[in-house]
Length: 374
Image 1: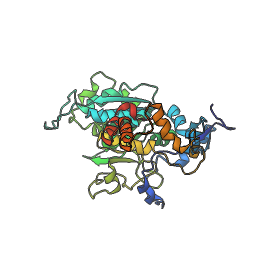
Image 2: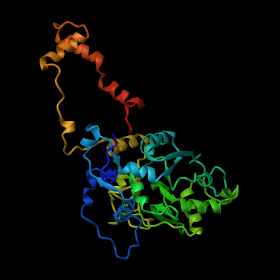
Image 3: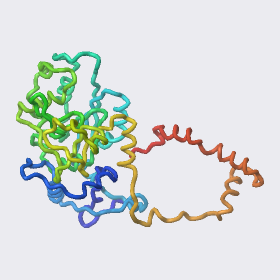
Image 4: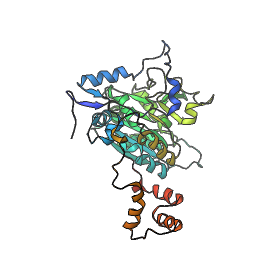
């Protein structure tokens, strides 16, 4: 039964971008430079959007969510319906693409994997090749369905916290021209790095559709083969659409173009091309590199599946005993028509035939039907 309060009540947004205990170091708020450009995202902007819809929220412990048999509408579920995101995964590894679709990609409103043919051994030659990543991306953007307000474009090794992205986007007008991500400057061009993923509003996508309205317009531009993020930035700049500061209200980064180690412990040269200084790390983090598909399953488990029960009573009730403790093993044997007067070795053998050894257990756990990604 759907439980409603005086106003439609929602579970307080426990958005997933809390990166384990290491993020505790950001508890002391960092003051932003007064000369910093205005930021796109602040909680105030989102809360204003939330109140305009006459919504109210109520905190509900995980203990109630999991064990109380009540049904709640969570804030993230509301955002899923009202901030639709079209996710495009640029695929170079089928293994990574599969992992992305089975983990964080399940939280997109629609996922479109696009294969990029790549040969790293070939010298990069500037040419208008139909197989270049820019031409592939350009043609895809011309076909984005009208019903989607936002388009997210990422490589197959990027992990995205889609709930945090919706929180970021909810207070923005999708009809305006937004181009969001981690901004760098290279070869005199300011653009958002593909490694961190980048987001286009419907307003920006519509402008690109008008610019490339001819059938072969995408391939007329001479490009290097795998620099689609760079050429997208160039073409958006012609339309006067430029990247904006996506750091949070405390100046902490939200789009990360590297893996978590280099996010937490950046080297001297990692962010030398970044327009806005990197500061680790926003609790509203949106994207980072997972590097390998296997790690995506680990991140997904830690960020979406593990739940910390701080208090509650529904899930802490002891099970009702149907047998006395000393009757449990007797009933176990009786159900299997095994006599009670067996030796300890025989009893162990009974369990050995029922329970997997550690190696078999690990192998079974990797099978799809054993892994609950929801």
